[in-house]
Length: 273
Image 1 (cartoon, rainbow, N blue to C red):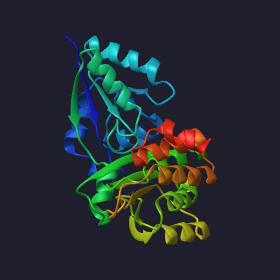
Image 2 (cartoon, one colour; image 1 turned 180 degrees about the vertical axis):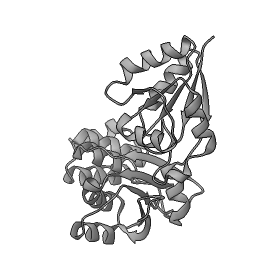
Image 3 (cartoon, rainbow, N blue to C red; image 1 turned 135 degrees about the vertical axis):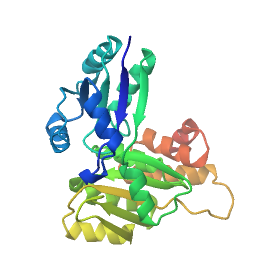
């Protein structure tokens, strides 16, 4: 009889947030798939959990995924955990869960803390509708193309960001979104948890002069409704030209302008070249 795959949420900072059912599940499974076993062993030791772990992360997920699923199909129960928060959200665990469903393995949730929802809840930003955009690419071109595609997004946008990339990200956001409101939520559930409600211009200036510390969740105001006529093809081409001036290729700029205007990419591209 096949076992199960348990998706177990872990604390995002404060170990006291680990739910009793999470502890019980990790104690009862046969083995644990962990993003970084060196991080996870601290959690296991704290709750006196002694179970074998298998390393499962971005660069070995194909090989290890098959191994994990085969063990479950042979009757073992497995829990997948990440370094912090719910696995499978902006995380390679997504692939393991997909593979489990494809192979007919039962997947069961053991929910725990989630940084994106927790940050939104304490940010004071509009939460009725939002979009989670995860981590932006370290590649400058890819990052800017991602932001360009969101210029007309009306929902609140949530991003994760590392401290060493924060300043560049804020400057790019200001360039593509204009001077909107942003909430910077740092070190959730930890001793130095903070929420800063700023404008993008002030945030970009402040962190260019002050070294960011800790992991950030960025919550950016969506584009406000504008009264007026729909964008013309000339305005769409002008938008594409402005994006090219910021370093985007003609093809990428045409695609971004198409996403924001409703015109076809090829029509905009022809006007550009």
